[in-house]
Length: 540
DNA sequence: CGTATTTGACCTGCGC
DNA sequence: GCGCAGGTCAAATACG
Image (cartoon, rainbow, N blue to C red):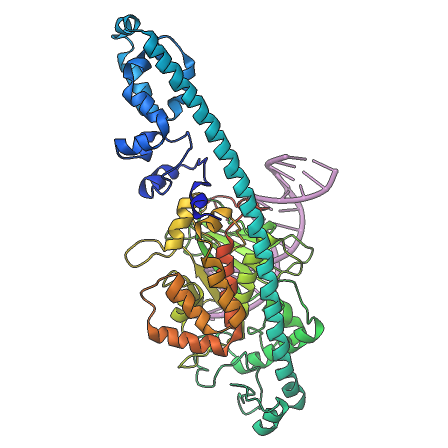
Protein backbone atom coordinates (compact mmCIF):
# COMPACT_ATOMS: atom_id res chain seq x y z
CA UNK A 1 0.00 0.00 0.00
CA UNK A 2 1.23 3.44 -0.79
CA UNK A 3 2.71 5.25 2.13
CA UNK A 4 0.96 8.38 1.08
CA UNK A 5 -2.37 7.00 2.06
CA UNK A 6 -1.15 6.63 5.54
CA UNK A 7 -0.93 10.34 5.80
CA UNK A 8 -4.34 11.05 4.44
CA UNK A 9 -6.36 8.52 6.31
CA UNK A 10 -7.21 10.81 9.15
CA UNK A 11 -9.74 13.17 7.69
CA UNK A 12 -12.00 14.08 10.53
CA UNK A 13 -10.02 15.02 13.58
CA UNK A 14 -11.97 16.18 16.54
CA UNK A 15 -9.64 16.13 19.46
CA UNK A 16 -8.79 19.37 21.08
CA UNK A 17 -5.13 18.52 21.03
CA UNK A 18 -5.23 18.32 17.34
CA UNK A 19 -4.70 21.96 16.57
CA UNK A 20 -1.38 22.11 18.28
CA UNK A 21 -0.60 18.72 16.99
CA UNK A 22 -0.92 19.75 13.41
CA UNK A 23 0.93 22.94 13.95
CA UNK A 24 3.87 21.08 15.28
CA UNK A 25 3.81 18.30 12.75
CA UNK A 26 2.29 19.52 9.51
CA UNK A 27 2.67 16.24 7.80
CA UNK A 28 -0.83 16.32 6.45
CA UNK A 29 0.15 18.60 3.65
CA UNK A 30 -2.66 17.38 1.48
CA UNK A 31 -5.48 17.38 3.87
CA UNK A 32 -8.89 17.73 2.38
CA UNK A 33 -10.71 18.13 5.59
CA UNK A 34 -12.97 21.15 5.51
CA UNK A 35 -12.52 21.63 9.21
CA UNK A 36 -9.18 23.28 8.83
CA UNK A 37 -8.74 26.72 7.45
CA UNK A 38 -6.10 27.29 4.90
CA UNK A 39 -4.23 29.78 7.00
CA UNK A 40 -3.41 27.18 9.60
CA UNK A 41 -2.63 24.43 7.25
CA UNK A 42 -0.30 26.37 5.00
CA UNK A 43 2.14 29.04 5.82
CA UNK A 44 2.67 30.79 2.53
CA UNK A 45 0.44 32.08 -0.17
CA UNK A 46 2.07 29.78 -2.67
CA UNK A 47 1.12 26.85 -0.61
CA UNK A 48 -2.40 28.13 -0.38
CA UNK A 49 -2.65 28.21 -4.11
CA UNK A 50 -1.31 24.73 -4.34
CA UNK A 51 -4.38 23.34 -2.72
CA UNK A 52 -6.91 23.76 -5.40
CA UNK A 53 -8.81 26.83 -6.23
CA UNK A 54 -11.06 27.45 -3.36
CA UNK A 55 -8.42 29.45 -1.64
CA UNK A 56 -7.62 31.51 -4.67
CA UNK A 57 -11.24 32.16 -5.20
CA UNK A 58 -11.64 34.05 -2.01
CA UNK A 59 -8.28 35.64 -1.71
CA UNK A 60 -8.11 37.09 -5.19
CA UNK A 61 -11.71 38.16 -5.70
CA UNK A 62 -12.61 40.25 -2.76
CA UNK A 63 -15.22 42.34 -4.56
CA UNK A 64 -17.06 39.20 -5.53
CA UNK A 65 -17.06 37.97 -2.04
CA UNK A 66 -18.51 41.21 -0.84
CA UNK A 67 -21.24 41.05 -3.37
CA UNK A 68 -22.11 37.47 -2.68
CA UNK A 69 -22.58 38.09 0.95
CA UNK A 70 -24.35 41.33 0.55
CA UNK A 71 -26.86 39.62 -1.63
CA UNK A 72 -27.30 36.78 0.75
CA UNK A 73 -26.16 34.17 -1.69
CA UNK A 74 -25.48 31.13 0.42
CA UNK A 75 -24.06 29.01 -2.31
CA UNK A 76 -20.66 30.50 -1.82
CA UNK A 77 -20.91 30.53 1.88
CA UNK A 78 -20.77 26.76 2.01
CA UNK A 79 -17.22 27.01 0.94
CA UNK A 80 -16.33 29.31 3.74
CA UNK A 81 -15.40 26.20 5.58
CA UNK A 82 -12.30 26.06 3.53
CA UNK A 83 -11.19 29.60 4.14
CA UNK A 84 -12.94 30.72 7.22
CA UNK A 85 -10.57 33.49 8.12
CA UNK A 86 -10.08 35.21 4.82
CA UNK A 87 -13.59 34.96 3.55
CA UNK A 88 -15.76 35.79 6.49
CA UNK A 89 -13.63 38.48 7.96
CA UNK A 90 -13.56 40.42 4.78
CA UNK A 91 -17.29 40.30 4.45
CA UNK A 92 -17.85 41.45 7.96
CA UNK A 93 -15.49 44.37 7.67
CA UNK A 94 -16.72 45.71 4.38
CA UNK A 95 -20.34 44.78 4.11
CA UNK A 96 -21.62 48.12 5.27
CA UNK A 97 -19.42 50.68 3.58
CA UNK A 98 -18.95 48.98 0.27
CA UNK A 99 -22.51 48.09 -0.38
CA UNK A 100 -23.16 50.64 -3.07
CA UNK A 101 -19.88 50.01 -4.75
CA UNK A 102 -20.64 46.37 -5.04
CA UNK A 103 -24.06 46.97 -6.46
CA UNK A 104 -22.77 49.37 -9.06
CA UNK A 105 -19.90 47.19 -10.11
CA UNK A 106 -21.84 44.08 -10.99
CA UNK A 107 -21.07 42.95 -14.48
CA UNK A 108 -21.96 39.90 -16.45
CA UNK A 109 -18.32 39.11 -16.63
CA UNK A 110 -18.04 38.95 -12.91
CA UNK A 111 -21.20 36.96 -12.62
CA UNK A 112 -19.98 34.40 -15.06
CA UNK A 113 -16.75 34.24 -13.27
CA UNK A 114 -18.65 33.69 -10.09
CA UNK A 115 -20.68 30.89 -11.59
CA UNK A 116 -17.57 29.28 -12.89
CA UNK A 117 -16.07 29.41 -9.46
CA UNK A 118 -19.18 27.98 -7.92
CA UNK A 119 -19.13 25.20 -10.39
CA UNK A 120 -15.53 24.60 -9.64
CA UNK A 121 -16.24 24.46 -5.97
CA UNK A 122 -19.04 22.02 -6.48
CA UNK A 123 -16.70 19.79 -8.38
CA UNK A 124 -14.19 20.07 -5.66
CA UNK A 125 -16.74 19.10 -3.11
CA UNK A 126 -17.66 16.07 -5.13
CA UNK A 127 -14.02 15.25 -5.36
CA UNK A 128 -13.67 15.71 -1.64
CA UNK A 129 -16.50 13.35 -0.96
CA UNK A 130 -15.02 10.85 -3.31
CA UNK A 131 -11.69 11.09 -1.57
CA UNK A 132 -13.30 10.71 1.80
CA UNK A 133 -15.17 7.63 0.74
CA UNK A 134 -12.01 6.19 -0.67
CA UNK A 135 -10.25 6.96 2.56
CA UNK A 136 -12.93 5.11 4.42
CA UNK A 137 -12.64 2.18 2.13
CA UNK A 138 -8.90 2.10 2.56
CA UNK A 139 -9.28 2.35 6.28
CA UNK A 140 -11.52 -0.65 6.24
CA UNK A 141 -9.08 -2.57 4.15
CA UNK A 142 -6.30 -1.64 6.49
CA UNK A 143 -8.21 -2.85 9.49
CA UNK A 144 -8.96 -6.09 7.75
CA UNK A 145 -5.38 -6.64 6.71
CA UNK A 146 -4.20 -5.70 10.16
CA UNK A 147 -6.47 -8.19 11.83
CA UNK A 148 -5.40 -10.93 9.49
CA UNK A 149 -1.84 -10.03 10.07
CA UNK A 150 -2.24 -10.14 13.83
CA UNK A 151 -3.92 -13.50 13.67
CA UNK A 152 -1.18 -14.92 11.53
CA UNK A 153 1.45 -13.40 13.70
CA UNK A 154 -0.07 -14.90 16.77
CA UNK A 155 -0.33 -18.26 15.17
CA UNK A 156 3.30 -18.14 14.27
CA UNK A 157 4.38 -17.13 17.73
CA UNK A 158 2.24 -19.85 19.19
CA UNK A 159 3.77 -22.47 16.98
CA UNK A 160 7.24 -21.29 17.80
CA UNK A 161 6.62 -21.33 21.49
CA UNK A 162 5.12 -24.76 21.29
CA UNK A 163 8.15 -25.94 19.45
CA UNK A 164 10.42 -24.53 22.11
CA UNK A 165 8.23 -25.93 24.80
CA UNK A 166 8.33 -29.39 23.32
CA UNK A 167 12.07 -29.32 22.99
CA UNK A 168 12.43 -28.16 26.56
CA UNK A 169 10.15 -30.90 27.75
CA UNK A 170 12.27 -33.47 26.04
CA UNK A 171 15.34 -32.12 27.74
CA UNK A 172 13.98 -31.68 31.19
CA UNK A 173 11.87 -34.71 31.78
CA UNK A 174 14.62 -37.30 31.76
CA UNK A 175 16.33 -35.24 34.35
CA UNK A 176 13.25 -34.99 36.50
CA UNK A 177 12.74 -38.69 36.48
CA UNK A 178 16.24 -39.92 36.71
CA UNK A 179 17.42 -37.53 39.33
CA UNK A 180 21.14 -37.41 39.94
CA UNK A 181 23.03 -38.49 36.92
CA UNK A 182 26.42 -37.56 35.77
CA UNK A 183 26.87 -34.97 33.12
CA UNK A 184 28.24 -37.61 30.84
CA UNK A 185 25.08 -39.65 31.10
CA UNK A 186 22.99 -36.59 30.47
CA UNK A 187 24.95 -35.79 27.39
CA UNK A 188 24.29 -39.26 26.14
CA UNK A 189 20.62 -38.91 26.80
CA UNK A 190 20.63 -35.80 24.69
CA UNK A 191 22.20 -37.61 21.82
CA UNK A 192 25.55 -36.25 22.73
CA UNK A 193 24.41 -32.69 22.47
CA UNK A 194 25.66 -30.51 25.24
CA UNK A 195 22.87 -28.32 26.46
CA UNK A 196 24.20 -25.10 27.91
CA UNK A 197 23.62 -24.49 31.58
CA UNK A 198 21.63 -27.61 31.96
CA UNK A 199 21.11 -29.69 35.07
CA UNK A 200 22.83 -27.41 37.45
CA UNK A 201 23.23 -28.31 41.05
CA UNK A 202 21.70 -25.66 43.23
CA UNK A 203 22.83 -26.70 46.61
CA UNK A 204 23.41 -29.43 49.10
CA UNK A 205 19.96 -30.80 48.54
CA UNK A 206 20.90 -31.59 45.03
CA UNK A 207 17.98 -29.71 43.61
CA UNK A 208 18.04 -29.53 39.92
CA UNK A 209 16.68 -26.76 37.90
CA UNK A 210 15.16 -26.32 34.56
CA UNK A 211 17.84 -24.91 32.35
CA UNK A 212 15.49 -22.19 31.31
CA UNK A 213 14.97 -21.17 34.87
CA UNK A 214 18.41 -20.81 36.25
CA UNK A 215 21.05 -19.21 34.18
CA UNK A 216 23.92 -19.45 36.54
CA UNK A 217 25.08 -19.99 40.07
CA UNK A 218 26.95 -16.81 40.28
CA UNK A 219 24.07 -14.44 40.78
CA UNK A 220 22.02 -16.00 43.47
CA UNK A 221 22.36 -12.82 45.41
CA UNK A 222 21.09 -10.67 42.62
CA UNK A 223 17.84 -8.84 42.75
CA UNK A 224 15.82 -11.24 40.72
CA UNK A 225 16.94 -14.20 42.69
CA UNK A 226 15.98 -12.76 46.01
CA UNK A 227 12.47 -11.91 45.11
CA UNK A 228 10.75 -14.69 46.88
CA UNK A 229 13.22 -15.27 49.59
CA UNK A 230 13.88 -18.88 48.80
CA UNK A 231 15.31 -19.09 45.36
CA UNK A 232 16.35 -22.66 45.39
CA UNK A 233 13.08 -24.13 46.41
CA UNK A 234 11.27 -21.79 44.15
CA UNK A 235 13.22 -22.74 41.15
CA UNK A 236 12.67 -26.38 41.83
CA UNK A 237 8.95 -25.82 42.03
CA UNK A 238 9.09 -23.88 38.85
CA UNK A 239 10.65 -26.75 37.13
CA UNK A 240 7.99 -29.12 38.37
CA UNK A 241 5.17 -26.83 37.45
CA UNK A 242 6.49 -26.41 34.01
CA UNK A 243 6.73 -30.11 33.57
CA UNK A 244 3.19 -30.55 34.80
CA UNK A 245 1.91 -27.92 32.49
CA UNK A 246 3.63 -29.44 29.55
CA UNK A 247 2.27 -32.85 30.27
CA UNK A 248 -1.26 -31.82 31.00
CA UNK A 249 -1.76 -29.33 28.23
CA UNK A 250 0.91 -29.62 25.63
CA UNK A 251 -1.03 -27.61 23.16
CA UNK A 252 -2.15 -25.12 25.77
CA UNK A 253 -3.93 -21.95 24.80
CA UNK A 254 -3.90 -20.50 21.41
CA UNK A 255 -1.74 -17.58 22.31
CA UNK A 256 0.30 -18.71 25.28
CA UNK A 257 1.46 -22.25 24.90
CA UNK A 258 3.96 -21.74 27.64
CA UNK A 259 1.17 -20.82 29.97
CA UNK A 260 2.65 -19.11 32.97
CA UNK A 261 6.02 -20.26 34.06
CA UNK A 262 6.29 -20.22 37.80
CA UNK A 263 9.03 -18.56 39.68
CA UNK A 264 7.36 -16.91 42.59
CA UNK A 265 5.99 -19.89 44.38
CA UNK A 266 5.99 -19.61 48.07
CA UNK A 267 8.12 -22.45 49.26
CA UNK A 268 5.72 -23.24 52.04
CA UNK A 269 2.82 -23.93 49.73
CA UNK A 270 2.13 -27.15 47.92
CA UNK A 271 2.67 -26.93 44.22
CA UNK A 272 -0.96 -27.52 43.50
CA UNK A 273 -2.09 -24.64 45.64
CA UNK A 274 0.52 -22.27 44.46
CA UNK A 275 -0.02 -22.85 40.80
CA UNK A 276 -2.83 -20.38 40.49
CA UNK A 277 -1.01 -17.83 42.53
CA UNK A 278 2.20 -18.03 40.61
CA UNK A 279 0.40 -17.87 37.33
CA UNK A 280 -0.64 -14.39 38.24
CA UNK A 281 2.52 -13.08 39.77
CA UNK A 282 4.41 -12.20 36.69
CA UNK A 283 3.26 -8.86 35.44
CA UNK A 284 3.63 -6.82 32.36
CA UNK A 285 3.16 -3.16 32.79
CA UNK A 286 2.47 -0.86 29.89
CA UNK A 287 2.93 2.86 30.15
CA UNK A 288 1.04 4.81 27.58
CA UNK A 289 0.05 8.36 26.96
CA UNK A 290 -3.66 8.40 26.66
CA UNK A 291 -6.45 10.73 27.55
CA UNK A 292 -8.79 7.80 27.58
CA UNK A 293 -9.61 6.31 30.97
CA UNK A 294 -8.44 2.93 29.87
CA UNK A 295 -6.46 1.61 26.97
CA UNK A 296 -8.13 -0.66 24.51
CA UNK A 297 -6.60 -4.06 24.20
CA UNK A 298 -9.31 -6.04 22.53
CA UNK A 299 -10.44 -7.86 25.65
CA UNK A 300 -13.53 -7.34 27.74
CA UNK A 301 -12.93 -6.28 31.30
CA UNK A 302 -15.06 -5.88 34.33
CA UNK A 303 -14.09 -3.56 37.07
CA UNK A 304 -14.10 -5.21 40.45
CA UNK A 305 -12.37 -2.74 42.63
CA UNK A 306 -10.73 0.59 43.01
CA UNK A 307 -8.30 1.76 45.59
CA UNK A 308 -6.12 4.64 46.39
CA UNK A 309 -2.53 3.63 46.13
CA UNK A 310 0.06 5.15 48.34
CA UNK A 311 2.00 7.98 46.75
CA UNK A 312 -0.43 8.48 43.91
CA UNK A 313 -3.40 10.82 44.06
CA UNK A 314 -5.04 8.91 41.24
CA UNK A 315 -6.99 5.80 42.14
CA UNK A 316 -5.97 2.41 40.92
CA UNK A 317 -8.71 0.44 39.23
CA UNK A 318 -8.83 -3.32 39.17
CA UNK A 319 -10.28 -5.20 36.23
CA UNK A 320 -10.70 -8.84 35.44
CA UNK A 321 -11.16 -10.40 32.06
CA UNK A 322 -14.76 -11.33 31.35
CA UNK A 323 -14.34 -12.86 27.96
CA UNK A 324 -14.57 -16.29 29.50
CA UNK A 325 -15.79 -17.61 32.79
CA UNK A 326 -12.94 -18.15 35.14
CA UNK A 327 -10.33 -16.36 33.09
CA UNK A 328 -7.61 -15.52 35.58
CA UNK A 329 -6.30 -12.49 33.77
CA UNK A 330 -6.54 -9.24 35.62
CA UNK A 331 -5.24 -5.84 35.06
CA UNK A 332 -4.71 -2.68 37.00
CA UNK A 333 -5.12 0.74 35.51
CA UNK A 334 -3.68 3.80 37.10
CA UNK A 335 -2.49 7.16 36.01
CA UNK A 336 1.09 8.09 36.64
CA UNK A 337 1.48 10.37 39.61
CA UNK A 338 4.17 12.44 37.93
CA UNK A 339 2.51 12.76 34.59
CA UNK A 340 -1.18 12.13 34.60
CA UNK A 341 -1.33 11.88 30.88
CA UNK A 342 0.44 8.60 31.24
CA UNK A 343 -1.75 5.62 31.80
CA UNK A 344 -0.13 2.64 33.45
CA UNK A 345 -1.80 -0.66 32.72
CA UNK A 346 -0.48 -3.73 34.43
CA UNK A 347 -1.48 -7.13 33.13
CA UNK A 348 -1.31 -10.27 35.15
CA UNK A 349 -2.13 -13.83 34.24
CA UNK A 350 -2.82 -15.90 31.20
CA UNK A 351 -6.07 -16.03 29.31
CA UNK A 352 -7.76 -19.41 29.31
CA UNK A 353 -9.80 -18.76 26.22
CA UNK A 354 -9.33 -17.84 22.58
CA UNK A 355 -8.79 -14.20 21.91
CA UNK A 356 -10.03 -11.99 19.15
CA UNK A 357 -7.37 -10.82 16.75
CA UNK A 358 -7.46 -7.38 18.25
CA UNK A 359 -6.46 -8.79 21.61
CA UNK A 360 -3.85 -11.18 20.40
CA UNK A 361 -1.02 -8.76 20.04
CA UNK A 362 -1.28 -7.59 23.59
CA UNK A 363 -1.84 -11.05 24.90
CA UNK A 364 1.19 -12.34 23.10
CA UNK A 365 3.25 -9.45 24.33
CA UNK A 366 2.31 -9.79 27.93
CA UNK A 367 2.53 -13.53 27.84
CA UNK A 368 5.87 -13.59 26.14
CA UNK A 369 7.26 -10.89 28.37
CA UNK A 370 6.02 -12.66 31.46
CA UNK A 371 7.35 -15.95 30.27
CA UNK A 372 10.64 -14.39 29.49
CA UNK A 373 10.80 -12.76 32.85
CA UNK A 374 9.76 -15.79 34.80
CA UNK A 375 11.93 -18.15 32.88
CA UNK A 376 14.91 -16.28 34.29
CA UNK A 377 16.85 -17.32 31.28
CA UNK A 378 18.59 -14.17 30.33
CA UNK A 379 22.24 -14.94 30.27
CA UNK A 380 24.81 -12.26 29.98
CA UNK A 381 28.36 -11.70 30.94
CA UNK A 382 27.55 -11.55 34.60
CA UNK A 383 24.90 -14.19 34.38
CA UNK A 384 21.98 -11.86 34.50
CA UNK A 385 20.08 -10.11 31.85
CA UNK A 386 21.08 -6.52 31.68
CA UNK A 387 17.95 -4.51 32.10
CA UNK A 388 19.03 -1.81 29.79
CA UNK A 389 19.91 -4.32 27.20
CA UNK A 390 16.54 -5.91 27.50
CA UNK A 391 14.94 -2.56 27.10
CA UNK A 392 16.86 -1.78 24.01
CA UNK A 393 16.53 -5.18 22.54
CA UNK A 394 12.84 -5.48 23.08
CA UNK A 395 11.95 -2.02 22.01
CA UNK A 396 14.92 -0.46 20.43
CA UNK A 397 13.06 2.72 19.63
CA UNK A 398 13.94 4.12 22.99
CA UNK A 399 16.60 3.66 25.53
CA UNK A 400 14.18 3.03 28.32
CA UNK A 401 11.11 1.52 26.80
CA UNK A 402 11.25 -1.85 28.40
CA UNK A 403 12.53 -2.50 31.85
CA UNK A 404 12.45 -5.31 34.28
CA UNK A 405 11.66 -4.45 37.80
CA UNK A 406 12.48 -7.02 40.38
CA UNK A 407 12.32 -4.69 43.30
CA UNK A 408 8.57 -4.57 43.04
CA UNK A 409 6.51 -7.15 44.92
CA UNK A 410 6.12 -9.03 41.68
CA UNK A 411 8.55 -9.36 38.84
CA UNK A 412 7.35 -6.91 36.27
CA UNK A 413 8.23 -6.14 32.72
CA UNK A 414 7.48 -2.55 31.95
CA UNK A 415 6.93 -1.51 28.40
CA UNK A 416 7.35 2.20 28.50
CA UNK A 417 6.21 3.65 25.25
CA UNK A 418 5.97 7.14 26.57
CA UNK A 419 9.70 7.50 26.74
CA UNK A 420 11.50 10.31 25.06
CA UNK A 421 14.88 10.54 23.53
CA UNK A 422 17.62 12.35 25.39
CA UNK A 423 17.00 15.46 23.33
CA UNK A 424 13.42 15.45 24.43
CA UNK A 425 11.99 14.29 21.17
CA UNK A 426 9.73 11.35 20.97
CA UNK A 427 10.88 8.24 19.21
CA UNK A 428 10.20 8.20 15.54
CA UNK A 429 7.39 5.74 15.71
CA UNK A 430 5.99 7.61 18.63
CA UNK A 431 5.82 10.74 16.59
CA UNK A 432 4.11 8.90 13.83
CA UNK A 433 1.56 7.60 16.21
CA UNK A 434 0.89 10.99 17.58
CA UNK A 435 0.46 12.39 14.17
CA UNK A 436 -1.82 9.65 13.09
CA UNK A 437 -3.98 9.49 16.15
CA UNK A 438 -3.82 12.21 18.75
CA UNK A 439 -6.52 10.48 20.71
CA UNK A 440 -4.29 7.65 21.45
CA UNK A 441 -0.76 8.71 21.60
CA UNK A 442 0.91 5.43 21.87
CA UNK A 443 0.78 2.29 19.82
CA UNK A 444 0.07 -0.05 22.59
CA UNK A 445 1.26 -3.52 22.46
CA UNK A 446 -2.11 -4.02 23.95
CA UNK A 447 -3.61 -5.55 20.95
CA UNK A 448 -4.35 -2.19 19.60
CA UNK A 449 -4.65 -2.89 15.99
CA UNK A 450 -5.24 0.61 15.08
CA UNK A 451 -4.94 1.14 11.38
CA UNK A 452 -3.32 4.50 11.85
CA UNK A 453 -0.29 3.03 13.38
CA UNK A 454 -0.02 0.35 10.80
CA UNK A 455 -0.29 3.03 8.22
CA UNK A 456 2.37 5.03 9.93
CA UNK A 457 4.81 2.21 9.61
CA UNK A 458 6.25 1.94 6.20
CA UNK A 459 5.22 -1.33 4.73
CA UNK A 460 8.68 -2.68 3.97
CA UNK A 461 9.57 -2.47 7.63
CA UNK A 462 7.07 -5.00 8.74
CA UNK A 463 8.44 -8.10 7.13
CA UNK A 464 11.91 -6.89 7.81
CA UNK A 465 11.31 -6.56 11.51
CA UNK A 466 9.17 -9.57 12.00
CA UNK A 467 10.47 -12.02 9.54
CA UNK A 468 13.97 -12.38 10.75
CA UNK A 469 13.42 -12.84 14.44
CA UNK A 470 10.57 -15.18 13.84
CA UNK A 471 12.23 -17.43 11.40
CA UNK A 472 15.84 -17.29 12.34
CA UNK A 473 15.52 -17.01 16.04
CA UNK A 474 18.86 -15.44 16.23
CA UNK A 475 19.97 -12.31 17.84
CA UNK A 476 21.23 -11.24 14.50
CA UNK A 477 17.70 -10.44 13.63
CA UNK A 478 17.48 -8.38 16.75
CA UNK A 479 20.54 -6.55 15.64
CA UNK A 480 18.94 -5.78 12.39
CA UNK A 481 16.01 -4.35 14.16
CA UNK A 482 18.18 -2.15 16.24
CA UNK A 483 20.56 -1.03 13.60
CA UNK A 484 18.64 -0.93 10.44
CA UNK A 485 15.06 -0.26 11.15
CA UNK A 486 15.06 1.86 14.21
CA UNK A 487 18.22 3.78 14.49
CA UNK A 488 19.22 4.23 18.03
CA UNK A 489 22.54 5.86 18.58
CA UNK A 490 22.85 4.77 22.16
CA UNK A 491 23.10 1.09 21.35
CA UNK A 492 26.74 0.23 21.34
CA UNK A 493 28.37 -2.65 19.62
CA UNK A 494 29.09 -4.19 22.98
CA UNK A 495 25.47 -4.10 23.84
CA UNK A 496 24.64 -5.65 20.56
CA UNK A 497 27.19 -8.33 21.06
CA UNK A 498 25.76 -9.13 24.44
CA UNK A 499 22.33 -9.14 22.92
CA UNK A 500 23.49 -11.52 20.27
CA UNK A 501 24.75 -13.92 22.86
CA UNK A 502 21.63 -13.62 24.91
CA UNK A 503 19.24 -14.16 22.07
CA UNK A 504 21.21 -17.00 20.63
CA UNK A 505 21.18 -18.75 23.94
CA UNK A 506 17.56 -18.10 24.70
CA UNK A 507 14.83 -18.72 22.19
CA UNK A 508 12.32 -17.54 24.73
CA UNK A 509 13.70 -14.10 24.49
CA UNK A 510 13.41 -14.11 20.76
CA UNK A 511 9.78 -15.04 21.05
CA UNK A 512 9.21 -12.26 23.48
CA UNK A 513 10.99 -9.83 21.25
CA UNK A 514 8.98 -10.90 18.26
CA UNK A 515 5.78 -10.65 20.19
CA UNK A 516 6.61 -7.21 21.48
CA UNK A 517 7.46 -5.94 18.07
CA UNK A 518 4.48 -7.53 16.50
CA UNK A 519 2.27 -5.98 19.06
CA UNK A 520 3.67 -2.59 18.32
CA UNK A 521 3.21 -3.04 14.66
CA UNK A 522 -0.24 -4.31 15.32
CA UNK A 523 -1.52 -0.87 16.17
CA UNK A 524 -4.72 -0.36 18.11
CA UNK A 525 -8.42 -0.65 18.06
CA UNK A 526 -10.03 2.07 20.01
CA UNK A 527 -12.97 1.40 22.24
CA UNK A 528 -13.07 -2.28 21.92
CA UNK A 529 -15.19 -3.68 24.66
CA UNK A 530 -13.69 -1.69 27.41
CA UNK A 531 -15.45 -0.03 30.19
CA UNK A 532 -14.30 3.34 31.31
CA UNK A 533 -12.50 3.82 34.51
CA UNK A 534 -13.76 6.44 36.78
CA UNK A 535 -11.81 9.61 37.00
CA UNK A 536 -9.36 10.73 39.56
CA UNK A 537 -11.97 10.75 42.26
CA UNK A 538 -11.30 8.32 44.97
CA UNK A 539 -13.62 6.16 46.88
CA UNK A 540 -11.64 5.59 50.00
C1' DC B 1 -34.66 -6.66 35.05
C1' DG B 2 -30.11 -7.95 33.96
C1' DT B 3 -25.60 -6.21 33.92
C1' DA B 4 -21.92 -3.20 35.21
C1' DT B 5 -19.99 -0.10 38.53
C1' DT B 6 -19.22 1.72 43.06
C1' DT B 7 -17.50 1.35 47.50
C1' DG B 8 -16.97 -0.12 52.29
C1' DA B 9 -15.41 -4.22 54.45
C1' DC B 10 -12.43 -7.86 54.67
C1' DC B 11 -8.21 -10.67 53.83
C1' DT B 12 -3.31 -11.20 53.31
C1' DG B 13 1.50 -10.16 53.39
C1' DC B 14 5.09 -7.48 55.16
C1' DG B 15 7.83 -4.48 58.10
C1' DC B 16 8.62 -2.85 62.59
C1' DG C 1 1.24 -8.30 67.74
C1' DC C 2 0.20 -4.24 65.38
C1' DG C 3 -0.31 -1.14 61.65
C1' DC C 4 -0.07 -0.35 56.89
C1' DA C 5 -0.79 -1.14 52.10
C1' DG C 6 -2.29 -3.90 48.32
C1' DG C 7 -5.74 -6.70 46.66
C1' DT C 8 -10.38 -8.79 46.60
C1' DC C 9 -15.21 -9.51 47.82
C1' DA C 10 -19.87 -8.51 47.70
C1' DA C 11 -23.87 -5.64 48.76
C1' DA C 12 -25.66 -1.44 47.15
C1' DT C 13 -26.35 1.39 43.42
C1' DA C 14 -26.56 3.00 38.65
C1' DC C 15 -27.62 2.26 34.05
C1' DG C 16 -29.58 0.75 29.65
